[in-house]
Image (tube, rainbow, N blue to C red; front, side, top):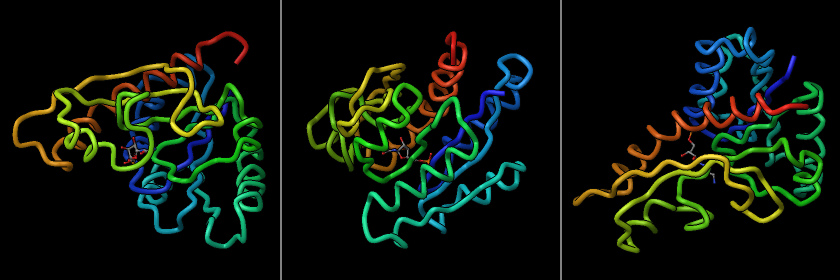
Length: 195
Ligand code: GAR
């Protein structure tokens, strides 16, 4: 079985979309794949309860309990590796990862970022797109490399920026697309030979 481990920090709507796609799309039967676990760096992440409701093991590795990034990542990697994952999927996981961690999962670490990369890496993407006067915005799924919000692009979706948009209205329009393209990109990765 190809195990997928999903890392979250918050509400987990992308994680929920992936779990739904796996169930409704028959990933277990068609692709021999399953969402094996959800791990959060925040104990209060809403997505933890969502995962448990679906019968998926949900764990916390609280970054605040560690002195430094390396110690946190060592325990995070240990938690992930227990599932021997074919893919590690970042779904609103809001910690910067060291090159060591990224290297450990090279080629099987994937992220979703709410902008049309390479535009607007980092935080507050929707606010920055509005301030820049962008006429379109969007979302990118990419393989993770050591550089923040960089790496080979797997999928993108574009949405219009409408007159009167706020950060919230634009974020909601983008999020709807996130829930469509993330499962599609992950399914395509699972289909790749040798994974
Ligand atoms: C999503 O919009 C995702 O693209 C973004 O956080 C949100 C998480 O929502 N990720 C990043 O900004 C990563 N740089 P969710 O918890 O409901 O999936």
